[in-house]
Each structure stands twice: as C-alpha cells, then as structure tokens.
Image (cartoon, rainbow, N blue to C red):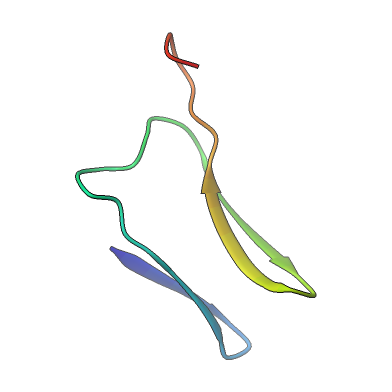
Length: 44
C-alpha cells in the first residue's frame, strides 16, 4: 500500500498482492490525484 499526496490531495493505492506488471502512472488533474497501472505482457 502506498499514498500519493499532492497539494493536500491524497490517493491511497492498495493492491491485494502486488501491482500488475507495467508502469505506474500518477496523474494530477482538476478533479484530484489518480494512480493507475498500464499492464504489459501476454495478458494485456
């Protein structure tokens, strides 16, 4: 589990076991902080 905090806005990310293989993307927009993973590999 980890938290991303930007200007007092926090997004908590908690993967049950581990995140999917791929880049973790942190986006900051007017609606807040978003953390996503774009899976890569054969199951894509």
